Length: 609
Image 1: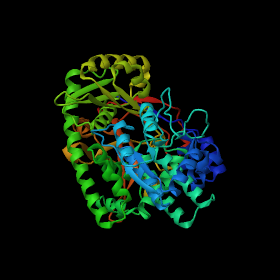
Image 2 (image 1 turned 180 degrees about the vertical axis):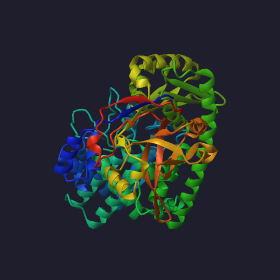
Image 3 (image 1 turned 120 degrees about the vertical axis):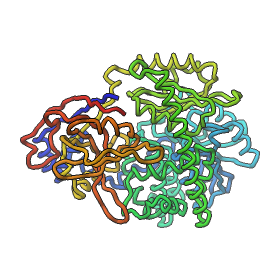
Image 4 (image 1 turned 60 degrees about the vertical axis):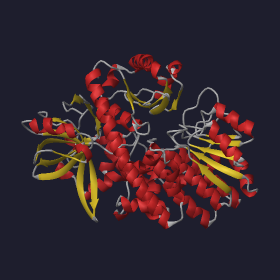
């Protein structure tokens, strides 16, 4: 797919001014300015990301009311049930509250719905079953804000319901005893981007303060909360919420907590993935190693085992569960590759991405637990909003769909516009789920594509690669990348800086690698410096890249690869194209920066991906 390269403006005077006023290196000043951060006070807060920057839990809308309901239930030993979602965010959030309430002496259990049988959100039959077993108070985690009818069922059953969630709200809120939500109407919480686990952490913090009858909790509870920050960091990265503000603080300190203070189950996962051998973790380690193994349990109907893994105190059980989830992740990977192959064939045979504003694909027998991953890969590859629907083999059940956004389309609004064609739908701007009768799929496809065509501006249809600066491969060193890493943790809304190297040649032919040969490994040569580059999911670049007769321009992200205690420089290839006659970007700040100032330019690559 043709991509547009956008080079960030380079203002030497502003870089030097921020460098002086904030007492930072020119490299960090240049990259911060590229992110729109100009004020020294803001720079300090961004780079330090202190735990003290987390807002007091009582400020979170609805939290005080929830604490006042839950604390007496703990003291009176009422039967409390944590009702969590089945993804990594829901599992980590449920685990935080389960561990917290147990520590505070509560009579507590946990219910995680089976994704394949119960589906997303509160389920009326599950609430009835919980009531029959003597449950009195239900606390939802990462779900419930859209469960209006189910909240009414809970009331009729005599269940006290507290909803904690972060998803988009409908026109009507559930009639719960308390609702904890960062964007609750009538409140003005400064940061609405917390995930479900982040909300759960704030509630656990508030409960610990209430139990301590003080803002400063006991050392025992403080140790728990630090461990809980690690769990919240996993949920935050896994749910792809913005890594800004409080989320940035949670992940910065949570990465340390996961490595240094893991629960027994997390410790076993770290061993299996060999992350325990690293000196420090990055957000990519969560995104590509830990979160997929937790999500695999949820996707294959075993989410309750994910919570048990995160909360068990038994080393033997922790080891067995970690190995099982590791195996499940391998099964999930095989299922995903099989469905993705079928879906790609459909796109190639039935769609013209140049003419279609969105993709809506349906397949019989597709596993509903992995279609979200397939939708993500298709949306990224084609830069089109994508809905993937799993149809029941026997046709006895409605189709289960998963949607992923592209081009800035707000999925929850798009699905709301097609609500007459759907049985259920929910989610947020970037990701959503739905159920649909098979007979409605064609009509839904037409309406969804019409909505996407009207809402997506033409300029958004071409994917964009934002480049922070030019940096020759010879500039890359461990100290320089450590400087760049000060801007981490990286993720949504705070991406790892993308740099440009021009006039690069291949030191050897590109190689396909990984399961199914989906990834690409290249050896890049520039000015006598050779570095290894990896392009995940871009094995199809191998032939066109090797066919270029001449040098290449490479858009890349620099990384430090740690293997058996040894550190080396590596690059992740974002995009490429045959070299232009002249360089495009101002260099990463250095002694020649003032002579190479560039204005913002746009150009398009010819790579396919």
